[in-house]
Image 1 (cartoon, rainbow, N blue to C red):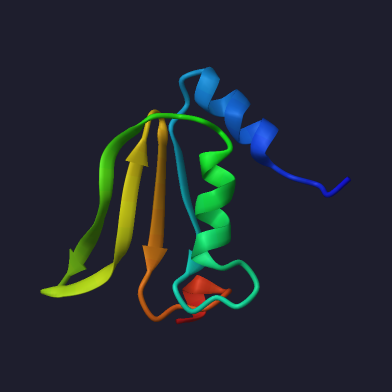
Image 2 (tube, rainbow, N blue to C red):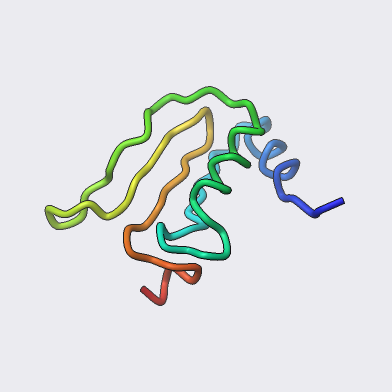
Length: 85
C-alpha cells in the first residue's frame, strides 16, 4: 500500500488547524498539480474559494483554491523544488 499524508492532513483539518499546501509548482514533473488536486479531493472537504489566480507585482504568481481549513496554492513557472525557482 502506498504511503500517504492524507490521514495526517485530515486530522489537522478536523482539529481546526488551517493547512496551507504548495507542494507543486505548475511545471513539477514529480508531483503534478493535477495529482495534488486529485489527492486533496479525496479529503472530501468543501470548497470555500474557487480556483483562481493570485497576483504578484501585476502578474499571475500561480493559482489558489480554498477549502474548509485547507488552502492549495500553485507557483507559476516553478518545478519540484519551489524555493529554487
